[in-house]
Length: 158
Image (cartoon, rainbow, N blue to C red; front, top):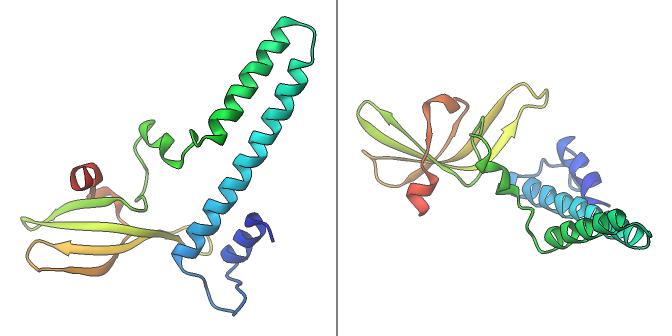
């Protein structure tokens, strides 16, 4: 079964033992599907590079060089999921990010482990762990209000 087909079963709530899979399993399948798609694109670029290199015109051979360079970059891992983060701010919580907000003068941190979407696609909620400055330790938490949080991942990890 391809990662795309496996993803369909996860979204539909179908698994081998009849239970709903957890966020980590969904993330693993999505990553596998992404790798499959990148492999298909790389193979297509290599095919196009060979076609262009076989042409007699210089412009087509230059297109072949460009295709070969792009294929090489993809194969070496230059296309990463976080490449788009530098383009714009996220519109919702991101997995493996830490967020912070103030609550009555105290600080709350929220480490996101997974983002879920309702079956009808209308509602999203982030699940993870919350740490409050007035209580030691972490506790399970969730949030659907992205507007009150500030992403402090770089400050916490870097």
